Image (tube, rainbow, N blue to C red; front, side):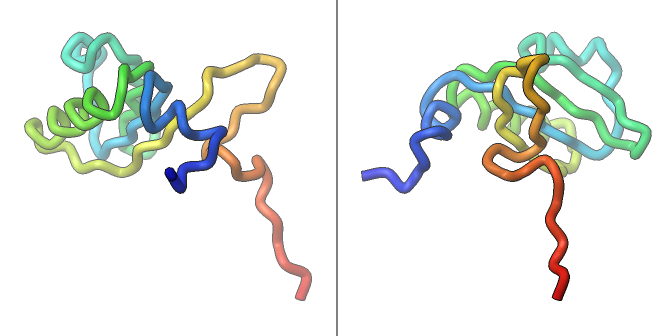
Length: 103
Protein backbone atom coordinates (compact mmCIF):
# COMPACT_ATOMS: atom_id res chain seq x y z
CA UNK A 1 0.00 0.00 0.00
CA UNK A 2 1.31 3.44 -0.90
CA UNK A 3 1.68 6.29 1.59
CA UNK A 4 1.04 8.83 -1.19
CA UNK A 5 -2.23 10.77 -0.71
CA UNK A 6 -4.80 9.86 -3.37
CA UNK A 7 -5.03 13.46 -4.64
CA UNK A 8 -1.28 13.45 -5.37
CA UNK A 9 -0.92 9.93 -6.80
CA UNK A 10 -1.05 11.09 -10.45
CA UNK A 11 1.92 13.40 -9.82
CA UNK A 12 3.99 10.45 -8.70
CA UNK A 13 3.12 7.79 -11.30
CA UNK A 14 1.89 9.48 -14.48
CA UNK A 15 2.07 12.70 -16.42
CA UNK A 16 2.09 15.86 -14.38
CA UNK A 17 2.87 19.56 -14.38
CA UNK A 18 6.06 20.64 -12.63
CA UNK A 19 7.89 23.85 -11.79
CA UNK A 20 11.63 23.34 -11.50
CA UNK A 21 13.54 26.34 -10.13
CA UNK A 22 17.29 26.65 -10.68
CA UNK A 23 19.87 29.30 -9.82
CA UNK A 24 20.96 31.28 -12.84
CA UNK A 25 19.25 32.38 -16.02
CA UNK A 26 18.71 30.21 -19.07
CA UNK A 27 18.03 31.75 -22.48
CA UNK A 28 14.66 30.77 -24.03
CA UNK A 29 16.52 28.73 -26.68
CA UNK A 30 17.19 26.12 -23.97
CA UNK A 31 13.46 25.22 -23.95
CA UNK A 32 14.01 22.73 -26.79
CA UNK A 33 16.62 20.94 -24.67
CA UNK A 34 14.04 20.67 -21.89
CA UNK A 35 11.38 19.06 -24.09
CA UNK A 36 9.66 22.35 -24.95
CA UNK A 37 9.02 23.38 -21.35
CA UNK A 38 8.53 27.07 -20.60
CA UNK A 39 11.52 28.96 -19.19
CA UNK A 40 10.92 32.09 -17.14
CA UNK A 41 13.79 34.19 -15.78
CA UNK A 42 13.10 35.62 -12.35
CA UNK A 43 14.27 38.93 -10.93
CA UNK A 44 15.88 36.96 -8.10
CA UNK A 45 18.48 35.38 -10.40
CA UNK A 46 16.63 32.10 -10.86
CA UNK A 47 14.92 30.43 -13.80
CA UNK A 48 11.63 28.54 -13.51
CA UNK A 49 11.26 25.63 -15.93
CA UNK A 50 7.56 24.75 -16.16
CA UNK A 51 5.59 22.20 -18.13
CA UNK A 52 4.27 18.68 -18.42
CA UNK A 53 6.51 15.75 -17.57
CA UNK A 54 5.47 12.29 -18.82
CA UNK A 55 6.42 10.37 -15.67
CA UNK A 56 8.97 10.13 -12.88
CA UNK A 57 11.60 8.72 -15.23
CA UNK A 58 11.26 11.78 -17.48
CA UNK A 59 11.44 14.08 -14.44
CA UNK A 60 14.67 12.44 -13.32
CA UNK A 61 16.03 12.83 -16.86
CA UNK A 62 15.32 16.58 -16.76
CA UNK A 63 17.04 16.85 -13.38
CA UNK A 64 20.09 15.01 -14.77
CA UNK A 65 20.24 17.50 -17.66
CA UNK A 66 20.31 20.34 -15.15
CA UNK A 67 23.13 18.63 -13.31
CA UNK A 68 25.00 18.08 -16.59
CA UNK A 69 25.08 21.83 -17.29
CA UNK A 70 25.94 22.65 -13.68
CA UNK A 71 22.87 24.65 -12.64
CA UNK A 72 22.14 24.42 -8.90
CA UNK A 73 18.65 23.09 -8.21
CA UNK A 74 16.52 25.29 -5.95
CA UNK A 75 13.19 23.41 -5.96
CA UNK A 76 10.96 20.93 -7.76
CA UNK A 77 7.24 21.52 -7.26
CA UNK A 78 4.40 19.47 -8.74
CA UNK A 79 1.62 21.80 -9.86
CA UNK A 80 -1.92 21.19 -10.97
CA UNK A 81 -2.96 22.53 -14.37
CA UNK A 82 -3.93 26.15 -13.81
CA UNK A 83 -7.66 26.90 -13.80
CA UNK A 84 -8.17 30.68 -14.17
CA UNK A 85 -11.19 30.50 -11.83
CA UNK A 86 -9.12 28.94 -9.02
CA UNK A 87 -6.24 30.68 -7.19
CA UNK A 88 -2.94 28.98 -7.99
CA UNK A 89 -1.14 27.29 -5.12
CA UNK A 90 2.62 27.11 -4.88
CA UNK A 91 2.54 23.86 -2.90
CA UNK A 92 -0.31 21.35 -3.36
CA UNK A 93 -2.31 20.86 -0.21
CA UNK A 94 -1.07 24.00 1.49
CA UNK A 95 -3.24 27.09 1.93
CA UNK A 96 -2.41 30.07 -0.27
CA UNK A 97 -2.12 32.32 2.80
CA UNK A 98 0.11 31.57 5.75
CA UNK A 99 -1.35 31.43 9.23
CA UNK A 100 0.35 33.15 12.10
CA UNK A 101 0.04 32.07 15.68
CA UNK A 102 -1.45 34.61 18.07
CA UNK A 103 0.23 33.06 21.10
